[in-house]
Length: 343
Image (tube, rainbow, N blue to C red; front, side, top):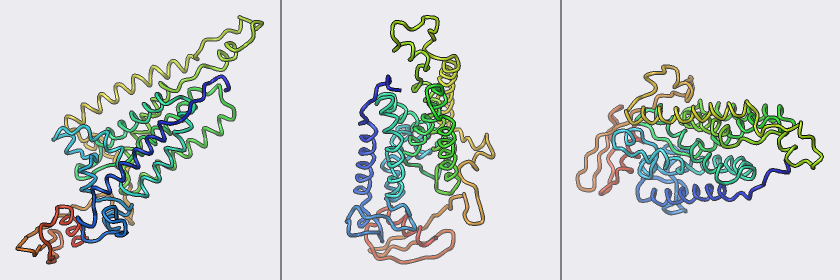
């Protein structure tokens, strides 16, 4: 549609740069050589990665992510750290994690920002990320944490889908585009059934973005545009309203659902509601157990004793005990030793 303004995309690339900078800062804070027994790629110094058995994504420790603002339900509910619902979407578990998310955000976000501008797409990105964090906090177990911009990425996908639906009349080859987009969304959501993937953040981000698309990304119908840019000889009998009835109805319903959904979700979360208690099957949306993996996280705990430079670590589950020689070990290092002994 040549009459629609084309914007220069700068906000989405800026978001990507911000995510990369935050990841670099996270790795600096992690400082694996001084806080862990073993590290990957020690040549990078304090930017080296945690061992694979602790973090297969090539990234920091869970303790570092938690201290940097990862989504921790217990801290949000009991320690009033609601800001974690926002900060978690700027953190990533590792190199593989951030590369996958940033590639998708650039691929989808730049196109949307060029078509609709930085204000609408910036709001779509941030609100979708918050929506994903909110749904995740209602369902994930309190012993787990969640990080990543994938909720915002799925929000962009949801917005692209609803934009195609609400602006159906102005597109050519729309059925093929719809089938392609739905296939991409289904495949990406299906990946979330594997363990260690927070699919509730994906679903929450997608639903938020899908509803926001009806509100933010509505276009005038083709007939109104044709009339507006027609010559003076254009017949006034063909005048059409700017938006179709179904566009107005979907705009209103989406806005109501967004307001109600976010309000109910926030009230439930701040009151400590565990959504799993009200939906016995919903946990299968995030992980389906098989003979190859379990969806229940292992509760790992150890008993420690320090005498001089001798640290004795005993796994509570299997009774295995190992003596290490180190002074003033950090909690991160003790947690890693415990994980190694109990695994």
